[in-house]
Image (cartoon, helix red, strand yellow):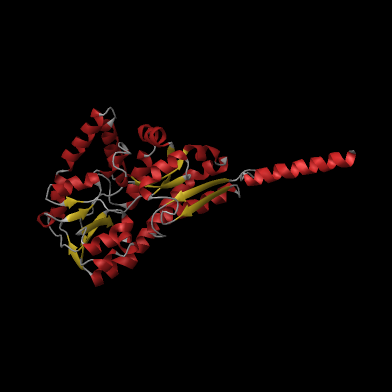
Length: 344
């Protein structure tokens, strides 16, 4: 009778363990894992998330894993917000310009000529703005997510098969740039067209796009756009996408306390790593561009012409947001004050 009881107990325990294993639940302490979706391969832009992975996994002491899936391996880049919201994967790369209307308040960061061109200053501005309660609420209420990783970009230049030296040269040119920046180009007759980064090579090669706006210089090199281009500008220095890394709120809550505590320091380390990576990329790619392409130096006076209409675009953006019950005017003033503070 005793042997039968022991045998039954062992069998029940084995069945329970098997059930746990089949359900993917460890009988040891649960390990928190974030699967992170990003387009493209390793490049200067991904140095931030790669640094965060190292820092946060170290802080987690074996109880935390951040798995980076390159090349949209977990799903289309244009659906990252929806997939993160429902927990299809825990975290991913977001660039506001890819998602028109989905991050209305955060789109303030894509207004033309608003953010500083200096990388450290831009990072400082973005980090402060992302802590604003209205931005935090937009991410949480709309997308069940929160910001966790910096992904700032260098200023934008244009590479392609149309020579652009003056604002007059933009007339009729199909130019790739994000929505709010596009308004500054449209004034001079440009035809803005949104194309995602991985599609840039074929778009230029086929003539779908005449000139491609991208962070200078790393992105042009990473996506090999110089292979299908004749010209590149230097001196426009336009704003571009506002990018960030977000994580599902439920996944964030489940992360080890040590990982959460390590996040601020890890973010600062990631910022420094990204700046170093962009600087290294410039040393590699700019000489190649100067050798293979005609480099068109855009005069400050031409950049000033583009920037001259920015105030009107800012006012239109704020009025549109206010009209929809959002604090657009308040947000614009806040961002402008943060920019002024970090560019003194």
